[in-house]
Image 1 (cartoon, rainbow, N blue to C red):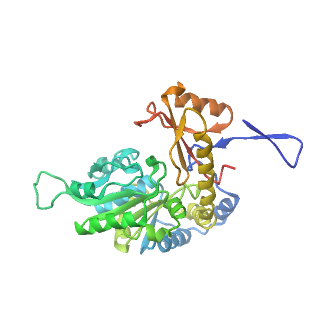
Image 2 (image 1 turned 45 degrees about the vertical axis):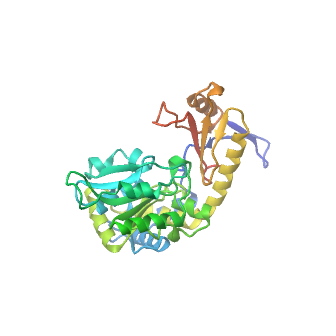
Image 3 (image 1 turned 90 degrees about the horizontal axis):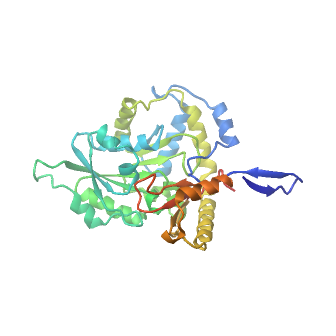
Length: 351
């Protein structure tokens, strides 16, 4: 454990510094109070007033017509892809290092019959526009090919170290999609982080998108849930798919109440999270044998150079014994090209 001298008492206190992920936050007292007093009804029937407030607020914030609460970001992305690609054998173009392709259990294929066509992600999380366009199937071409219907982006791009996609880049991809009569979905699990880091309103970042999934339980620290936003017709179809996938919950206003508090209280804390992540990265870069790429938001990837002769797993274990929790994302655990460690700074549980 990490020992500290309490400034208000003579006794020593201990704590654990948890840098594993921004998904491991705990509900604040304000969230717990809101959950305890939340007004609820049956959301499957469309009557839960607290969920309605959350969906209305999120649609407004994101600049879209409508929104839908779902249990998780993975389900949000799955529903979005399946809604756009409602014909089996459809194809989606997405990055080879993106969350939907790597970390969502192949759901778009196994459940939706959607074929992923990957384009190389650059180190900043973007994909070259010419490579995206080259991957689009000609609808008048051979019948042996899948039909391209969707392009997916991720902002921030987690596997690229939390890099931010600019509004201008997203606009260009959106224009390309429209040129070929395709839809654009953004996996915006950490879109608020991107907005704060770039100093650009979140609705501007997703203006070109036909749909966006936004995680409530990552950077802004709600305990559960994600939101999908899009047009009214898109959300109406998505609501049916949510029911099909088992995501229709009843008195879910208990959860939505915490998310409303997170929106009100925690978005403004993200800038502090980013500063702490950069401070950590600067310190780690001064240590021999470690390398950290420039940090834009709240994700810090630490690459262990070969000359250090110690594995990521060993470092993680040593830190854990001292009360510091980080995540091993080395090749022994994931299909990664580096022997590295991930830390995610979140102001709700790290001081």
